[in-house]
Image: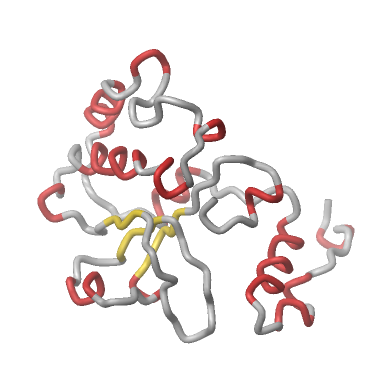
Length: 177
């Protein structure tokens, strides 16, 4: 369909709701624009443009990961996270183990290009007022100064992670259920 025939979309992020100093109103405007889906980036594009370029031995990483999948289930998740009574912080701690498993299969393992932090307890700070708190993220580089700040800065972070135990609207809008 040519662009001129595209249906008009109401952009809630251009509304007064998004300009509000109240985080919940701004978050609501973003969620209204997204609707019930989140755009996906093709894996090849994500790997090419967002992930560090290093020599991960894919077949070795797959073999290493398969050792953690007995009975068609990740060993780090003995039960379905959706059915878990634990909060997201404790429920998804196994994802850090997965990242470590993949990193150990990299030729740059001793000098991991982007250190990973899981479940930070504070919202990163930046030039704008943003109270978003990702459940995990990578640091952009190995700079120890950026990793030892009492409060991380958004400019030091890449590939933020957000974990969800459910797929309903209430699950999307939660803060560490």
